[in-house]
Length: 153
Image 1 (cartoon, rainbow, N blue to C red):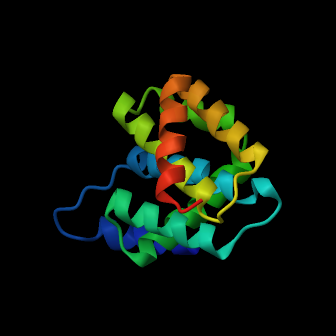
Image 2 (image 1 turned 90 degrees about the vertical axis):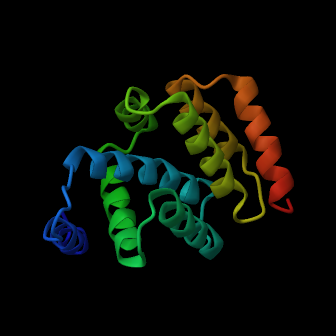
């Protein structure tokens, strides 16, 4: 683990009454990695995408800025180690409820529309992840349309 992650891990694990589950952190890092994969797929990473990723992670996991930075760092490592979406999705499929899967796909659409553009590869990525997670195509389309209307796209 990187030093930022190690510092957060130490901070959490030394807090009295706080039990740290490594599998829970890995689950969060895998979710963050799938969201992270949306950013560069159109050829560049936009500041708006980086900000959206951090906001989603902070809100979704109720973590502070240091923990978000550590999680983004861990996500980047996860992308480098198990970078293909099939492997990342496989790690989450059994761990997530259907509602959690829909939430993840919704957040992926947020990432897609963060820069104000829809790139074909982004569309294909979200659809592929949804398929691998077992989310029905009509649910994916419904979430895309909802997020598109919310994003001023």
